[in-house]
Length: 126
Image 1 (tube, rainbow, N blue to C red):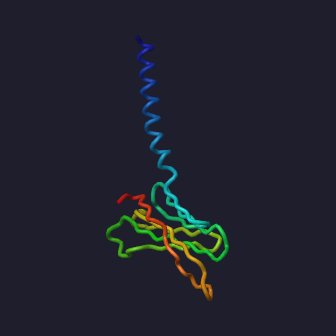
Image 2 (image 1 turned 180 degrees about the horizontal axis):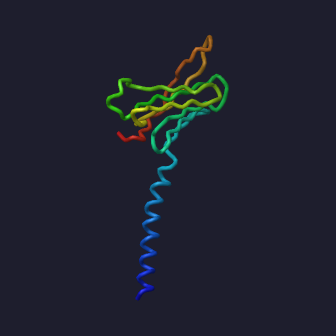
C-alpha cells in the first residue's frame, strides 16, 4: 500500500510540474510579425518592441505601437529600423498592448514613402 501511495504522489508531482512548465514555455517566445526583409518582435513579458530591417537596400520598416498605460499622454509610439539593422523601444510606464509592422521605400532625395502596414497584433488583448 505504501508503494502505491508513493507512486501516486510521484505521479501527482510530475503532473504538477508538467502543467506549470507547459504554459511558461508556450509564452516564452512572445509575438512576431514580418514582411519581406522586415520584422518586429515583442518578448513574452511585453516590456519592449524590436523592429529590424534585414537588408541595407531601398526598403524601410517601422513598428507603430501602443502601450497599456491609460495615463500615458502619447497616443502612438513609433520605432524605425535603421537600414540593415534593428532598433528597440520600450515604455517605462506600461507594456506593449498592440503593434503593427509598416513598410515603405526610399523615394526621391532618399525621403521615406510609407506604402502600408500589416494587420495589428494584440499581445495585450483587445
